[in-house]
Image 1 (spheres, rainbow, N blue to C red):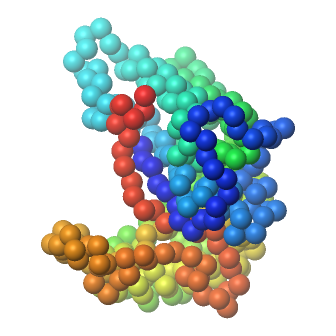
Image 2 (cartoon, rainbow, N blue to C red):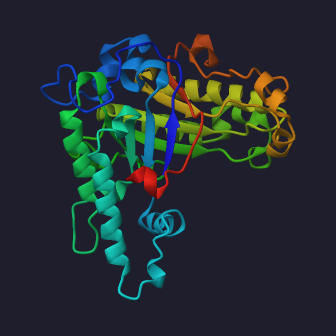
Length: 325
């Protein structure tokens, strides 16, 4: 699991330190789609992410197998050493833990979005009970005040293969659909120029069509786009990818005001080089880069008339077992 926080925010309201005493509660949950449709981006961002981008996204988008690995490796649930324990008992214990987490309103002082793996949306069966955690989150969503809204998302792993969004997403009241697109390193891409023409890489078109499919169903597409960011010409990769994506989104008829774009700003040095920097050098900024690199609307070529609600992944951290409690 990981937490990612956003940037570019305007003050909206002071977040209370407790679950009580909040301002008016909506008669029914406000959807992310409604906010982005009805508000300009200058107010939509703080409405979702709160003042200063102080609330971020909690990722719970792991496969069943990966969830069990995380329980063993991070939570130290050594079920292999428990002779009286079977994997299903461990699975049920984790579901109980996550359900407890999502009904704890202290979490939502820092989290505004939770991205679930698709299997969280499935109805319960005899072997798996993950839907309980998602249902707990949805009940909590209904109780959230207007000053501290929360939104449920799903990781759509099959967006490259499927033309249609699973009907389950709409039935379960999903706010946003997360799509991960990794173009690979420079050797795989073959140089930044290969990203300039969308026809050279079909992923741009597939992303755009998938984003349009989300919007047709009134769900916000959240695109995580990864291009080389530690190479010397990482600026070129980034700029070419942004231009090609904007072209394809416009061609597909995507309303870019209702798209969330997440990416890593280029820094142009390797991890080894960064480790070699002194503390002062880190504080002063990486070579040839501002220490306040920001992804915003100006990152998109103006002549494409595309406006994105943009986020930057500032940091990721694994939540420990004590955090989850």
